[in-house]
Image 1 (spheres, rainbow, N blue to C red):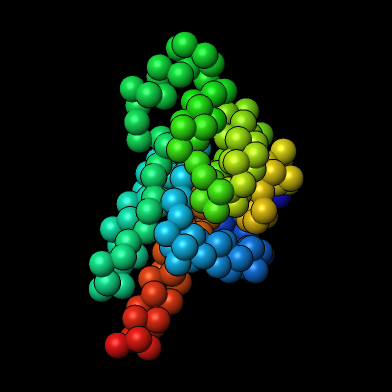
Image 2 (image 1 turned 90 degrees about the horizontal axis):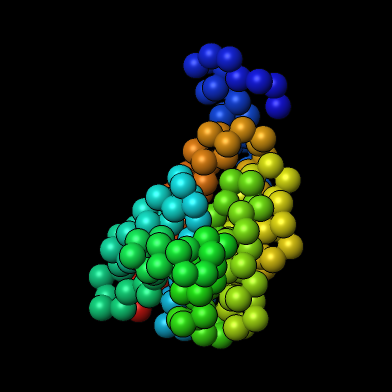
Length: 195
């Protein structure tokens, strides 16, 4: 992609990348998340920087907003939200372990590890995905560029077709909102069918 030099160029690049999004991967992610919901499994979200903020945001959307009027809720945890625990692992072990060590305590077969990394090469994200796979959890991810190492560690990986980190992060947020919207609609439709 050409270097973006102005506001119009940014939005043109964003629109082009959005038109090229691999929507089949997003649909597969929705299926994985709904499968975890149906089975009462837990979804663990994690990432760094802007991806950490998105992990918290998406956990909030799923945990609060994806209700269908029933008492059943998504079991969802953003591993980015326990700052004291993250800093303890970073200080006493290494920053690469901040998510993997949390998952070691929590993840069970059938759970979902949902990784977010613009580059797909963040060592702490890769270690967490490895721990999740070894535990028998499903692994899904949002990334960009060419998918990085993360792509091979995910059962479902959505790669934003861009090499611009801001475009990638914009479309990660859009993807999480698309997932939330589709999941909530499916849950509401299922609730209506059973009413």
